[in-house]
Length: 269
Ligand SMILES: O=C(O)CCC(=O)C(=O)O
Image (cartoon, rainbow, N blue to C red):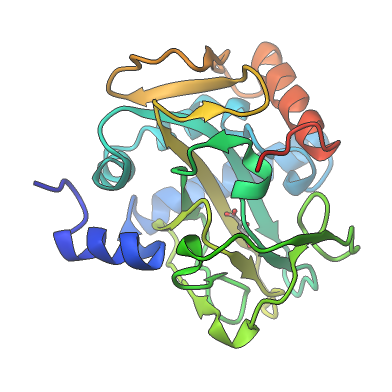
């Protein structure tokens, strides 16, 4: 008995490595989340992409609450079972008429997880369309042999290392547009990317990274937060969840985790 997805959608995810669109919240609520990202940017005086990465949920109790949203967790449970850890979260915010893009990549190369059972829930805080650079995936790539990444550090690439898969047939790319308040889901090994924003408004999404509790870190002990069920494995240490916006203890963990990732200390097979 599934909780949010139909049995056909679960089968489709297993075969194709993606599923969308699903509604998490109203357009109005999504606009409140957009305002939170923009308030953070005003607070730090910089683009949220520069720091709300890998552990972005630690910046605000509101983001942790969204990570625990029953509609999102019901969908995740249908795919990875009832015992769920939130391993991380990242903001992907493109400005109006922003040339920046995300190259084809597989998160499994960089997340340092085993086995590769992570699923990413990408929640739109704005509409994400073909014109403003919605997420694109390569259907079925989660079942194919791993691609090789080339780390380009290209200036307009939004990824930390400009990591880019070698030999992808771009014409296989499938767009996953979502309206504000909706989400898509993709598997950790599903190759994905996004194009630049060619519109006069921003495109903002918040990606949550979920794992079943039996998944462990291949690069030493790290932190995660149990968001549903029970953890009978104990592979992960607890995170310091924020008690207020920009809680110093949580922000310290966010900055540390993002620093390790950006500097290449975090890289798994
Ligand atoms: O939002 C984007 O454009 C890219 C998202 C992404 O790479 C991810 O969710 O892992």
